[in-house]
Image 1: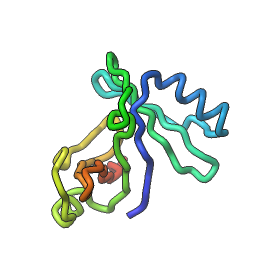
Image 2: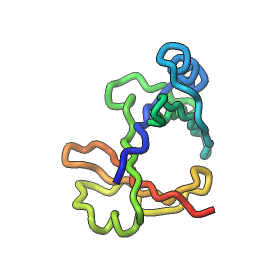
Image 3: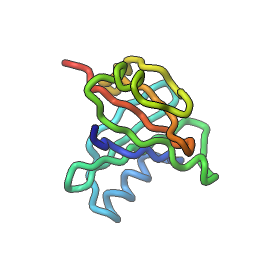
Image 4: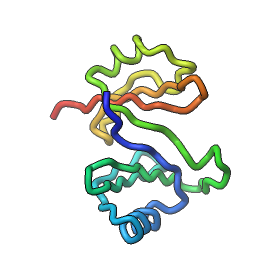
Length: 122
């Protein structure tokens, strides 16, 4: 497994992309939209990404609303989902065509959300 990205909930994805680029030297790498949620990614020079997730009508303003999840790459989402001792299922394995990946979400012992990501084959 390897860390892919950390997801932060933001009020304005465009503003956040600009801030990470101008202030920290990150570059926008890609993005996708699902329903009312707009996802933009910025990457550091080593390729480590931050996902900036803006949901229409939602302004994150509390500590628990600002951080969303940590994403890790796995070879097989279904297998990892079955093998990992989780402390709560957030989402069972499913294809996310917009993101180009099969994903599942579980909670760690302290309740943090961890996304398991398996890139879909082209």
